[in-house]
Length: 333
Ligand code: KG4
Ligand code: ZN
Image (tube, rainbow, N blue to C red; front, side, top):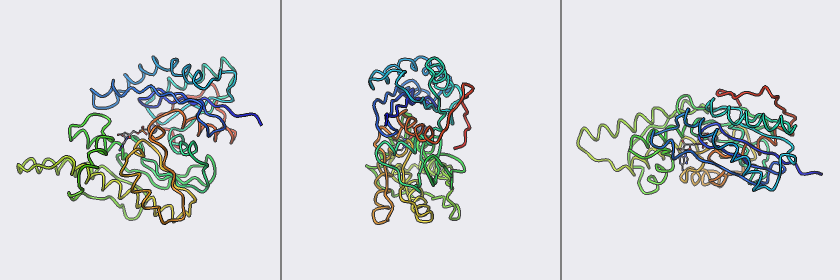
């Protein structure tokens, strides 16, 4: 049987990325041009700047991905591109690049959901066994997704306000740490102790999440201490915040994994890079029958290899997008 070669393209936020994936599981190339340095001084992603960088980078990144993989456009079975969710101006660059190349070379396009990409990053490290449960924790999303079969996604719980990554970034900002703050909080948390009392949003046993109350509690704790002239160690605050986030994420993932009797639990999204979360999840599932899959760090944050992996699943299911494919910032999974 001929190998299936898919080009993945990702431009939903602040990374311009392209990758070539063989048979949905093997990375032939994985190129990421990060814009973090350009957004840092603004303390977050500036959409207009992101779009402009994508325009500058997309052709270079595409050519580099093909070159490193040793393939040409003629070798491609399909192009998988992130169609949403994300920043509309950013998405449009990837979508239009995909359409231009697809039209010029007669290649099918598979519009791919960004979160499906994060989830299927796990397919690049091991075979997925269904039913599987994914704990998705990124800068824009926090949800528990049930996969009953390949390419089927059922959201069983999601955040009612901030995403986990967003809470990390906001708390980091309060502590005067640079963007993106997640990795800095993670590092500080390893050095500190979770000595401060912070809330956990259990939401009456639902699988939903809420992090805005926790974020406010962190800010209030800092301000109150300041007013009393007391000093709070940033590392202890980071450790306390991280403990609260992780406890809720892990407990809900365990409960859902048991209830839906899944074979695998797939960690996904940028916050999956969090050292504390990776350890806590591994520990929590140690004595449970389901497998836990945790992608390596370079597959946790935004990349196109994951889009190629998810696109491959959707391609096998028969999904094809037309040349009328559009960027959809609010796309449902
Ligand atoms: O998935 P991602 O790359 O982009 C979105 O699709 O949103 O996630 C980015 C988020 C940012 O909020 C960043 O602070 C967070 O992932 N993040 C982390 C860590 N590394 C990245 N959060 C906590 N600990 C980390 N080590
Ligand atoms: Zn992402």
